[in-house]
Length: 51
Image (cartoon, rainbow, N blue to C red; front, side, top):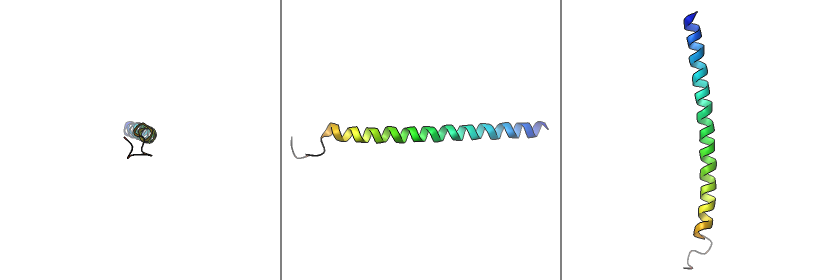
């Protein structure tokens, strides 16, 4: 009985950890997408020859 409770608790802990890592991954993708969009505006990539 104790083993089954420990196994269930371990499974739930791993499941939660995976969910958190997926959320972190999505947030990092959103951050990178925003950063790439703003980097293009800051460097004025539309007219690279003008300086």
